[in-house]
Length: 253
Image 1 (cartoon, one colour):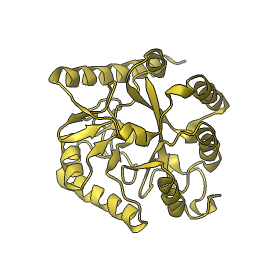
Image 2 (cartoon, rainbow, N blue to C red):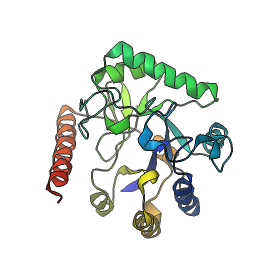
Image 3 (cartoon, rainbow, N blue to C red):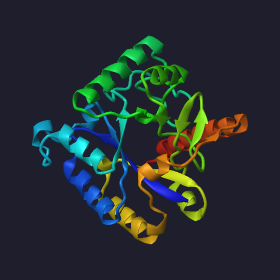
Image 4 (cartoon, one colour):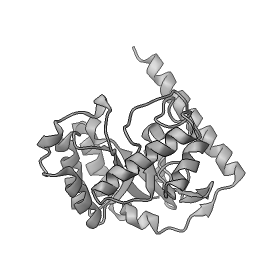
């Protein structure tokens, strides 16, 4: 499969050393990822460095520069604080900033996040849900807020559903690498990467260089309409993956 990259949890107080280390790898292989920017980070788990110590200077200007250089930007939630334990329409996690909080609250929150980005001259129609969790009210609020793309779901190419275009992520990276046709996205959290993770991605980028595409190239792929069967299959796959990950966590000593 053709592989694009998305980088989650981009904030002024992220682990800049790891972000820049991964960016160097992307630059080397001329891959321009999608980055999920949290408009107003309030998640202590994402607070790695002090916001004013970013080595790139002004955070927002840096993001704008990356966007001008061909990197794609998604609004990654608003505060990244989980408000419920709802799984939503794509049940990979049992926690959510949005699912289960009601339409009005979600709409106001999304508007706030979009306004913060706009204040810094950053504009996007792509949304990235924290913990991959959203519900039908999220979709409704996103559409009213001017979003038409969402980076989530499973599949071998972009698809349309509920009047939105979805850009699937990989169910399992090893399985995606075995396939020769289609498109997928590998999800990267640089804040939690270790040396082994960096080595694995360097090997992956080297071995599959001919399959790497920039996220902007993925956005040019014509989406297909998702069938009811496809929707059921996707939901089942996501729920199964959550169950397997949960079971594995419980079996750890």
